[in-house]
Length: 391
Image (cartoon, one colour):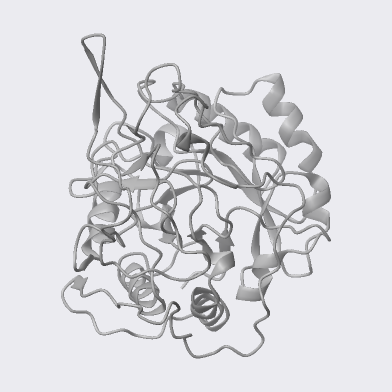
């Protein structure tokens, strides 16, 4: 199993504390040298750059302050770059290769990392003709299938297998794949199946971890998306039950086996408003609300059709730049083969895990993969990040 564990967003609180440490995370989401230097002993930093235009002056200025700093594990170049320019700014493999080569030359030993945009769907993922270690010289690639959803009475854990197989078929070896675990649900996120994402229960999270261990057993690091809430969703910082699971996973080097029922198990219905904590709760503390160095999520801006759905990555948050589609349409829009933002988001539970049973009172986005604007069909089929939009 991976020995480095990363969770994006809201990593540093107002007092400068690295809050994911309480769940055993030891790879921090940082966006300044001060944040990096303030990390506790034994914690390294993955520096968020949000740079995909090649070795520009902005890129050089962003990376240079970290040269020679032993706390740097690597650089998160950009989140789910678009190799086509159809859904977001065009990011070419050549520009990413130039950035990765520059970092390797000037920050020896540093890893370069991106998350991948799924160009297909959750049922038929595809990363073909996009980015690989060969054409970008990037070291590590995050793959992020999120299987816990409202639209089915069972969880399709084989979504993980399909995504990994598609990445390998596209030219990304298993050794270069970083597992991205689903640790969020509710809020304004809608999936590509006409439903919405649901916060996993402790048992479902354990099953996902065990499933990932079967397909990518020796990852360089693993990634929990996300620590902090970003779009009105319930995330890891608000779920003690999930923190207990990750404390065990992150500190023991293994996941408690959960019986595999063929890649699809019935959801665990939570009737008490909270999940039963997993074993290994000693040493946990109540999550500290992170208020420093990052934007306050609040209600999704997309809930107002007159407001652009932009998000800010201040101090270890927002990994997506944020696009303004408000002039194109009002209502809901898809943001990738698997992730949609809705102007009428489902109402998340305040701090509890949610069962996978669809809530008939929730407002969920329907499948609107294609948007007709003036007689032209635009396909917004992207995955999400990791700080702004999911997949």
